Amino acid sequence: MSDETGGLSDEPASRASKRRKPNIPADGEIVPLDEVSPERVPLDTVLLAAPPREFAALFADPPLVGNERREDFDKFFSAIAAAVKPADAIAWLYTWDIAYLSWEIKRERVVKADIIKSARISAVGRILESPIGDQ
Image (tube, rainbow, N blue to C red; front, top):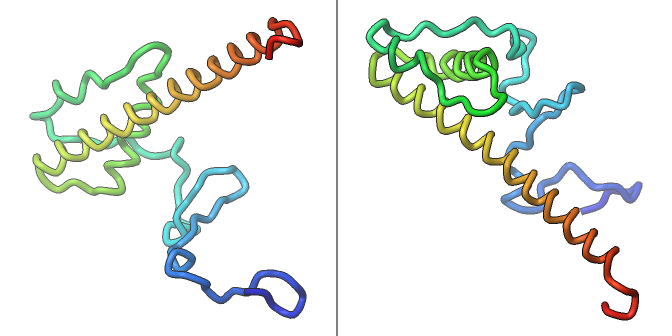
């Protein structure tokens, strides 16, 4: 829908347009609209979560590979724990699983992007190496 100036109106055109859209602050981090507030604390200042002592051995060895840093995982886990606010042992285990699996997803996205980039470079190399008439 357009308004008198030729731009888009604020009226929703479909059910999909009624969904909340993320707010993207100046630092580029995507934040849901309902989480934007002055009390929002940056991830690098999140206090580390303190799971129950019974889980100290389980939580002592996060799923890190390559050049991943323990500090980054601890901040990531703490941010998730702060949002979930686990109250008992089961909730802490679920929180750990969510952090663990989310960390793996993050890693796999990086690997996938590297694979795609490598394939593009390889394809361009084959195109550049082929004689002009062989295409």
